[in-house]
Amino acid sequence: MPDRPVLHHLSPAGRPADGYGQNLVDALAAAGWRVAETALPGAYPRVDQSAILAADIALSRLPDGAWVLVDGLALPGLAGGIALDSRRLRFVALVEQPLWRDPGLAADEAAALRNLEQGALALMRRVLVPSPAVAAEMAALGLPGNMVAVVSPDGDGALRLAALLDA
Image (tube, helix red, strand yellow):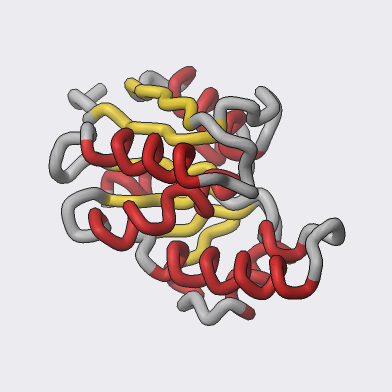
């Protein structure tokens, strides 16, 4: 196996261990990839300024050119940092579902979250999703079809992601 770079995975600290992104990252690790996990503080997806600062600090500590796997739930806290570091770091989003579609959000919150997600996702090298339905949601945000890939959160998905990273 060739020497692989370290993949940096950023996700909310309170994220369930069986989420889409975590399952995919665990499958990558099982396939021999080195993964550095960073748990971001805050009540995601609704974050405060301290959570945004912690996310910015986490990004600033990553080496230039690093592959950064971003859990979709972490996008609100990382959006500003992603905009600043999108040329320095290689971002890949792992999006289980669009956050702005949460039925518990007020209309103005949903609209603001939609704009935030759309902007952050547009700066990704790739956006990985678990299903064609979520891929359609990404297309509705205006993301190009070649940027979005349906990838299962298992060993086969890890192989597909590895091929995308190696390309």
